[in-house]
Amino acid sequence: MTTSKQEHREVARARAGANFALVKYWGKADARLNVPAVGSISITLDALFTETTVEVTPGLARDELMLNGTRRDEDLAKISACLDLLRRRAAVDTRARVASRNNFPTGAGLASSASGFAALVRAGEAAFGLTLSPRERSIVARQGSGSAARSIFGGFVEMHAGTAADGSDSFAEPLLASADWPLEVVIAVTAKGEKEIGSRTGMTRSATSSPYYAAWVAGQPPDLATGRSAIRARDFAALAELAEHNCLKMHAAALAARPPLVYWNGATVECLHAVRRLRAGGVPVFFTIDAGPQLKAVCEPGSRAVVEAALRAVPGVLELSTSALGPGAELY
Ligand code: PMV
Image (cartoon, rainbow, N blue to C red; front, side, top):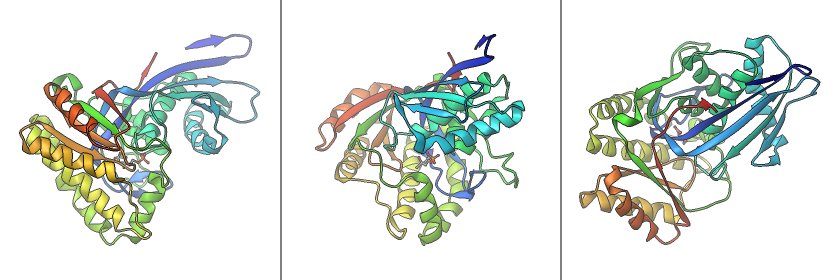
């Protein structure tokens, strides 16, 4: 952090990795506080990240946001609401300039809101002169985007839905360090535009109109318990079965909403079959899919090349990215 004496301008930069849930968050218990209806378990990535600079700027009438080099006034309300939480803690009212860059497609189901809000909170905290505990950081990040609470931490992470009315026990915490189980992820990009229905709208629509939503919520505690113990035991087969089941259950609830939420395209489904064929043939790999058409294949490092080759051969796959697991949100 640097401080310019003349203007009391404070600048901080942070980097945060995207994360993909293996046990999904889908649905809110409290929309205002952004408390999830279910807990979740994720992996944080090292190769897909957001870098964010927050510059506290006296005299600015309102916050400013540059995303990937373009002014994004349409996203400002959510950014300002998140910065307000930090300003309140710091007892200041000064506005900030935020410049954020993703090294991967924004808003396409690749968890840019997770890495984005985690980096914003980490940089904003420092720029406003605060020192938060990692748990407090995750609580603030959650209010920007539920999945962002998990990108505060590296490796395998669990997010607790919590029960407190004020959301104070709705936070993420680390489950297992990436070095303790260094899995890899191959991402099959099957469409590049921003998705049509964001997760917020998708969750509300699922909760209010899907006949399967209640079953989805009720099934989450046992899935979390299975996921937790599979990760602690580094039991790939158990995690694979559970993660695919949980992902398809989330999509089943979304598909049954009115109007339906169909996040997949044809290539997504072909990739899903390719992954299942590989695993049936003994390759340690499983898939997960979020609120978009990209397929994420999680594998053991020794199988990455064969997974990449299989997904590259699927018609409609536009490009592949690969990533190891990575650290939590850090200043740099
Ligand atoms: O935190 P949001 O609003 O980006 O929602 C995340 C929703 C999913 O990506 C579909 C699931 C998850 O747990 O990340």
